[in-house]
Amino acid sequence: MKYLLLIAGILLSLSACENNGGGEGGDPSEPLVFVSLTADKDTISPGETTKITAVATGYQITYTWLKSAGIITGSGSQVTYTVPPCDLGRNRVTCRVTDGNNATLSKEVYIVAE
Amino acid sequence: MTGRAGAQCLSSVNPVGGSGNLLVLEKNSLRTIAFFRYNYGNQYFEGTERSDFDLIESAGYSYGGIVAGYGATDRITLETELGYYFNKTQVYNLDPDYKLSGSGLSSAVLSAKFGLLKDNARRFYISSSLGVKIPFTTRPIIRDGVELPLDLQTTTGAMGAVWQAFVVKEQPVSGTRWFLTERVEANARNRQDYRQGTSAFTSLFFSKHLMFPWLKGDWTAILQLRNELRGRDQTGDMWRESTGSSVFYLSPQINYFIKEKWNLSLTGDIPLWQKFTGTQLAMKYGFSLNLARDFSLGKTID
Image (cartoon, rainbow over all chains, first blue to last red; front, top):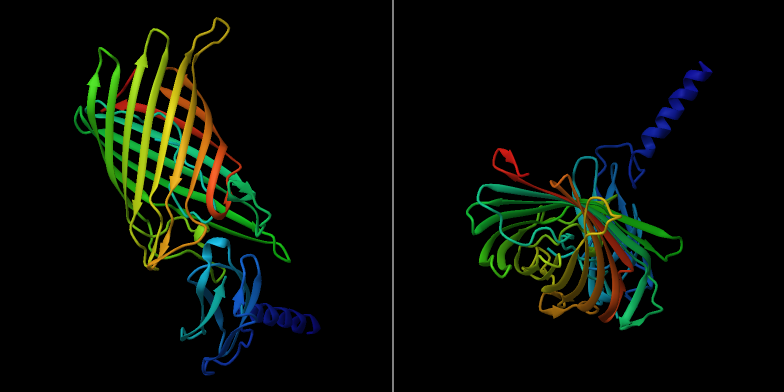
């Protein structure tokens, strides 16, 4: 019985890990709410980085990051943004959150590279 | 064809290599060329000087392509270029280090090549081609939930036009050949309103058939001097900073004819002189391996 409980615990843990980014898991009726999208800096120079953080709640959330220019590294709810010298200007970074019911919300943040 | 190299802040072009596809084919004959190309760079340049900027520690790509040509008539050859990036990779000087990679099909080029001059007495030939560049996708590649940078996309997602010209002069007595090639690519805007700058690649080749008593087989040495001129990119109505360049390459090449049917060649690319607008990552070296063969319709050309 003890081993069965242990195996069940491991399986539950693995299942929780598959919930990309959100980790909130559980309740399919939980509505998708995109609370905020913020960048640590709104102006950077080439090679400088800024963290961008998305805060969202909902059922099995995944995060997709798009940009008009620049380089995004990392994944999930927080990524790092930087620009090479060819991407100067006012660049848009879009975060799209999708829940397990395929509901989708997006927010944008603008970062000036100069 | 001319070998083409890549630099950062310059997005996807179809890299092709070699010098085996210059003139029109005979009617009902087929030419196939398979090639592999690798490029690597790890140094930024500002203008003509090395730069201390080091956002990208290293970048490179490996690419496999196929060129197929069919002689529709004795003066018109229909051609197609297709290729696949096995990987386009950038390693960043971030804390911690980070690497991004993209892979996928590049743009296809469909073209018609015309034989403009064929003077067998003087061994002088001119041909020219006009084609259309078609992206395999218009949507950017997303990996692990993140849209890859433009330089790692395998296509810009835009249509384009490709014009080429080939001038060949042969001197059979000395076993030498001069040829001049020009390739101009003009690009339309993609869905993000980005337009890659027009590029012009000019190559001057000198080839010498190697005939030495100690050398077995059919060998040819080729030396290529190439200029790659790239115009500046645009987003919307704005010119993008740090795009546009002029780079001269020296490209030694060795060809081997296997059983007078298969043409195998290895080409190296070494930048001689480079001038960039703004700050850009330059190519350090590249090489390509080509395998070509001609076929007649239903019968192998011997």
